[in-house]
Image (cartoon, rainbow, N blue to C red; front, side, top):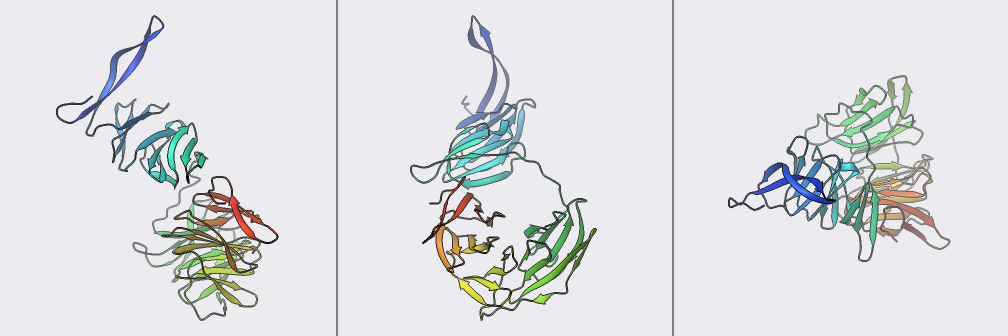
Length: 360
């Protein structure tokens, strides 16, 4: 309802019934809104979301008050997961927010069309629809991490989480080792570091500086981590500008991205060759079987897929910002926007669209 003061009033009514026909009774409560509502969505848990262009206000009917405000431009809103999350259409992307905390939890490519229970329907390229299932989850365990975390990996024992800290606001650089069972920091090493990865068996840790890569033996003894001594990884290349690392399951191939190219190192022979990924790549992963390499980008457009047998780029996926990770059986590539099946044909290697994927 418009008011002369340019404010707007949201009124919530309870529907009664008379002679088998619904009727409107007195309003249960009303709330003044600063901006004109564009769209309203309601949830079974009693939350009401009011979209007003650049802002969405979430109202708790039980408290009869605004509990959260989300400052984000949108043209459509939908509750999902019984009101736990609110999906916002933002042009070519859809963002999913925690309805009570007002924090963004997910973001993926596709314009929001509709929602039903735990599912979102979005448009992709012309003529394509994507149906995504949002599965609510709980935090496994909180860790007292106060540094800016650049990267993290689980140890093969599932007892440890290793995190790298670097950048503004962090006290130096290095690695932290966390006991997942006791949720506490058990060790740290303060070293210059640009990237790291653990071998799949958990027996080795690889770290990179700008000009060198080191391998560290790792041994666990109850809640103590024994690390080192470090050994320099030899590589036959004149370009020494290493960053994030990835290693295959057999511990034979190690990959690192530089500012313009990805280097693949044979750890047994030190033979090294370079691959040219799509523009503005930043993330890299090697499939456990050592046959594929994928690169994700930070400020570019394409995810790159390389056939390491032929040492060539065989496919790109136009996903925008995306990290990359292979499944343990090397059959799936996980990206920010979905999962893609890796298929090898007799004469060509491709990546086909999988669940949530848009590649061909």
